Amino acid sequence: MAFLTDRKRAEYRGSSRHGTEHFWGQTISAVGLAILIPLFVITFGCVLGSSYEEVLAYYQRPFPAIIAAMTFLVSMIHFRHGIQVVIEDYSRGLQKKFLIIAFTCIAYAIAATGLFALARIAL
Image 1 (cartoon, rainbow, N blue to C red):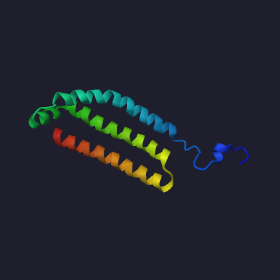
Image 2 (spheres, helix red, strand yellow):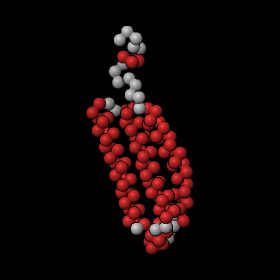
Image 3 (cartoon, one colour):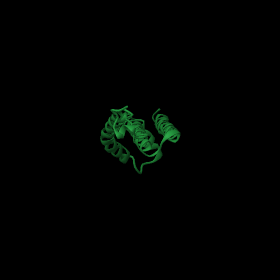
Image 4 (cartoon, rainbow, N blue to C red):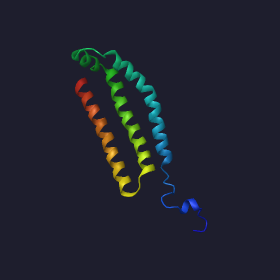
């Protein structure tokens, strides 16, 4: 223990060896969203103000449905990575574990709900 620095000896300050994975996961999803969000806005904007039947017919085509599904999925993955970093920075112990699990479940539930709704429209 003589070779430990003051920083290593500090409580809750040791390396968790997961920061790079979170950084790259969030960076990759951010790049994906930079491409998907404009495509989603364009595809969604084409049917904005249309009737219900026209919107259903539009999202039954493959391209708009795939863009919407990918946007739902990638945005929830990005949300999960981002909220996990925030939780790890500002909470400790059991509360941190509970919040990470809760928000991971929320992100996947929102993604599943969005994909289910889109599948109901497209099929």
